[in-house]
Length: 324
Image (tube, rainbow, N blue to C red; front, side, top):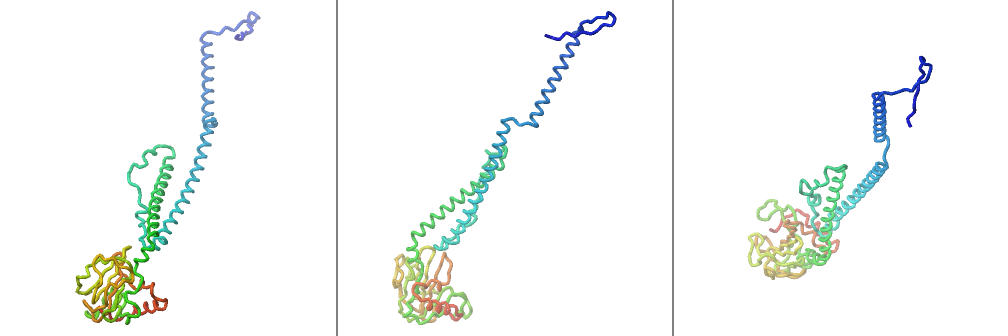
């Protein structure tokens, strides 16, 4: 019930009831409602800016938790990157070296991903850049791990074929020590006996009497046609040993093998002669790796003592005249 207010009328010396007009009542109500609305709005603004709701507090906690896990994830990715780089280094510089395989080019290991809009589905959100960068790192690590896995598959296959590879790689002298007169010339720049100038000598010359047996230095198959002579090499044989290796035997007097024939290490493939551009009976012997002629002196370890091997190296390095 509304309070009734009175005032003292000095004229009549009595109390009279205060009567409000409708306009006064409307004005008072409007002021009250306006003040109430202003106080309510002020309360909402203060609550939004200075106080967190339970839901907001929960969202903040979740965000802090996610940021913590994101930092931990980045550290794990850093560790995985280091582990994978170590695996790649050992693969290229140890395992593949042991089996004489070429390292995997960095252009393949570090190759990127195609497609401009590969990560378009995660753009436009809060923290989208963080998510995109992390996804990219995971994709790169996944691809590098796949390439490394395929490389290990190759290494395993090479390990299974190791015994066959060791039997095929040239590893003995093509002429027995007991039949060998001397090593006339080694690999490198030598004085040419016909042209009388220094030229690259791409093999080693073993002097021995005509008819001295010549041995295959590793397992393989004859890749040239021995019936055809060469102006320079005369009668010669080329053996393909596989694994990127070939050997060439030149200036032979007689040949025991035919094209495509399989040969074993130590098998007699022909005999020393003086055919082609040769100035005396000898064997010109070459080792070719992946199409490049290399120094044969590194491939005689199976039938020489350390002392004999050292002596051969010393003789092969003398800058004397070659026989072809």
